Image (cartoon, rainbow, N blue to C red; front, side, top):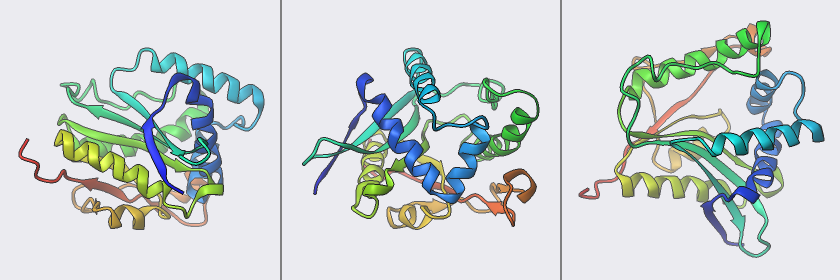
Length: 223
């Protein structure tokens, strides 16, 4: 069945994040990140209601962040999503671009999240700095619909945006998604440029985990 990747509308946000939480819960790496970001749980109706309300409030004031939905054309069901910042006019100073922390966490929970997200932000700063680019926070496909090409369709849409705007794309991949990105023309950032390895003590895994940092430059469009 064909898919369409479209800008998400306000009424879509709950369904869009249904796919996000389903996908990240099913992925081993993603599950760990959810546990760190939402240590008090993220499956209850109460949490999801508060999360949707908070997301909608943020979208009303966001200056560069865009949400995409992937829709099954045959059923109109939202099966995937993407969240990205398009930095056309980036913040000028390093201080303005610095990692802001997770506002809903405190104490040891916030410290643990900072140990994960802080190095990712530092690596992105090393690679992209104050340039104009597209930063992909997340791409997710509901596990019930994985293997049908929805993820590739979402990536293709973002690559088309990159080519049309002449902006490079930067993202942090999971180990399971790295192959897809490479097939779509992404390259791994050289380790001498930037490297992020999460310690097993922080993640709660058996071994340290290296994060694939991926970048794709736009096609030469003459823009």
